[in-house]
Length: 351
Image (cartoon, rainbow, N blue to C red; front, side, top):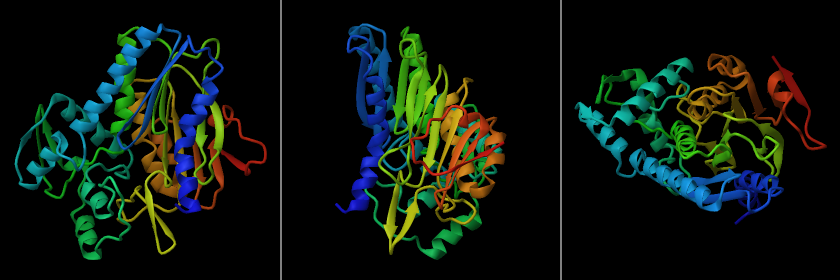
């Protein structure tokens, strides 16, 4: 393993480890944690202030739900989603679960808000770049095949959803909910924990985080991963019902001929977005905050220097961007919450 790969892996593990360190001030009798590997990433659930039996039962149910969602909506292993994609390719009407129909309707709404920069219908493009695989194979897609997908312009608005029936006006639609499912899973986890009477918990799915209640007398405190260094970019308190979502070019990528190719693809060009290293949004308490934190980080990431109007479209005032050159821009509302380590790069505050 070369140094760059070692740093990348260290950075990928940093956020959960930082959270664990920040939580260590609690006594073991008050803090309970379970971990797993789902959605292609590390997930952990932490519960505060409950008996071990109560906490473990609730966390185990959450992890079972994560596993169900992973299997049901996997983009390239046999699942309900791949069955729907097969039906679309054949020009057929598919009968789907109520859950999937609801997810697709919501994803279409979020895609429209973001000018389709968040576009779950572009699964064919993701596959061409090799990101629909457990192991990345560094390769550039065939130029003609890529152009054909761009000309077909599959969008979520091509779907016709009527109850549990789904069809597409465009056979090029190939669904991939990778930019939506982790956020949806956060909301499902929160619903399960609340139903079990759990009032204080922190749910982390590969850096997508949702908070319930608090940690004793203090809010939960989390770290934002630095996109290039194995250290936190900043830390901040996270309050009851708030969710954090980050899109970064360090999460899934490969390097070829000295150039980084990330999984965050621009549907307009067909290639990876290159103007941003990471884009973080903090969603204040509202319905489906977790889902929004996942989907709403994609359009501003892809938009590059024009990122701020897209966070506004989603009603998000707390956001931070690290540009391709490492420059940090942060909204005034989020800057007031952040703690940067000494010696950090200069920060530009935007309205």
